[in-house]
Length: 345
Image (cartoon, rainbow, N blue to C red; front, side):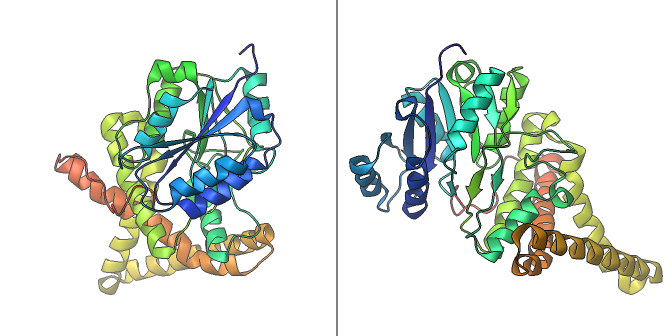
């Protein structure tokens, strides 16, 4: 890119006015020229006070803020609507449940211009004011033990990194080439990133531009979310088999082994010993994780929640993967979306 790009920051939102307020306030504090970015709130049919919230921000903010409305079609359609109306030549997507540090856009701009990048992905992380459960979920979602390095941290990765829609972007030129987000209910950002990578676009990972991902959740909602992700991986496989790598099946394999061993242990001394060995191994992993989380968060409470959060993540994803594998691959049935209260949970 020759001229300095203008960025269109696109936020899909559905009944998330409280989250949106926090995000807009963080964008207001960006250390970046106001004439080089705009913010587009693409409202996916909200019935809360989102319209009045955005209107109040328009009156007091110091950057260009655009508000779009559509009938409820999901975040992919909302992002597509935002790109269609954007005036920038580089589009950035963030979710409504994040906030950004003041130097976030500055680091993105630096990486895009220095690398002449067509697209980028950035990490998500925690903020010091997060409650213990969110810190525990953040640890589990970013730990190499539970993800194999898939969430975008530097270092060894056991499978391909895909930019995720909570913190990613692409040029207008690339969008015109590959099109917008597809119709998948879950996993649509991975399918979109897959098309970006397949197009031979230059994609950079911007480690210095994290977002603070404040998931509004509890343990059950977290379980349902990862169950949907497990199902989504099979839906992605049905689109293109290269989107299913060995690591993606690891939680399902672990789930099958755990269930099989536990069911057979009462009838086999050997399996009972396997349970004992597995328990000791799991205990060592948890002890390591608790100590590591204490190092990161300087608090014991997130670590004490890991014995609940980490199994919920592995088993939730595993059961979702197995269920949809049986439906779509073995029985050859159509797409199913899993837990479906709404797209944004």
